[in-house]
Image 1 (tube, one colour):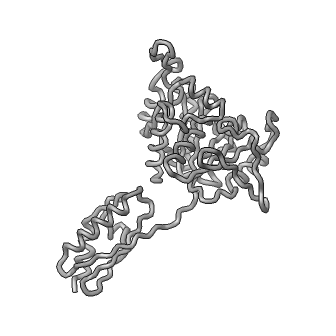
Image 2 (cartoon, rainbow, N blue to C red):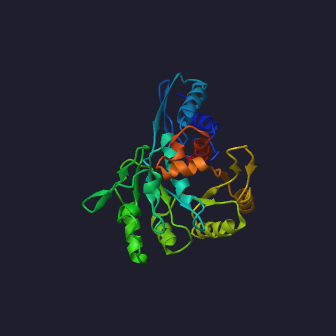
Image 3 (cartoon, rainbow, N blue to C red):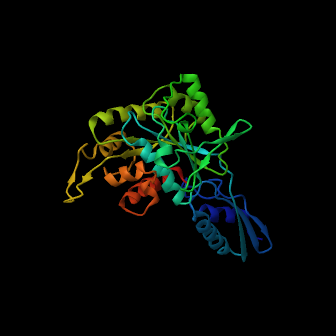
Length: 329
């Protein structure tokens, strides 16, 4: 019978994609069992990218079959059920396109096959119902738990704007706001594995309460390239850093304007500011979203550009892809 230590050494010759250690040392595989000339291994694929499990399985089979006395290798893949995670989309100030980015990130992530939901927590301007063409919808509730409203884009959403009459100001104080936000996040999100949360701008009690109670898996900071917006974006970054929430990176919105008549590119808000700020802070730069009239028109019409196939959709898709990679979705 083969020596179990030889099997362990063979498994440790294969690197765990996440830690870089050997599979046995990283706890990625259970101690192999041998019966006659057959070896059995349980492979934990929790947290691995799609397709990585099959690649590791093939490597395990090849490594163990190369050992004397092993003719057959069986690999059983297992995966822990992960809890629902939160992606916070934040900005230091309003008017930088945070809500538009949040909506299109949710669309792009859903198109990529991820199970997402969207929470519009921006009390100062809950605009997701307009951006997604859901202004006439209202959530229902069962046993005091809200049921998110399905969108035409492959995910469900809830917005503070759905809880009040259209056009009515949300003149709520802190406890009421925190309670309403809790209702949105604690809703029946079904199979959604990631909630994209469109936070209100700034670094006040709402953000702090949400971070402390629900602990986002990561935060994305949105800014325009101009210095004034970047100053406030740095404050938002500092808030998440102080509470230990990973910042996945910065997105530069309204970056570059192509003249529809001559095609010349101009930069009304500057260029490269968010990328430079990310580099200075040692954070990833997730990409640029152009200042494009088609994005504005589609957003006003409740047709998020990420649902299409043009250049605007590609810009959002690339940002979403980098976020998915950072979160290991």
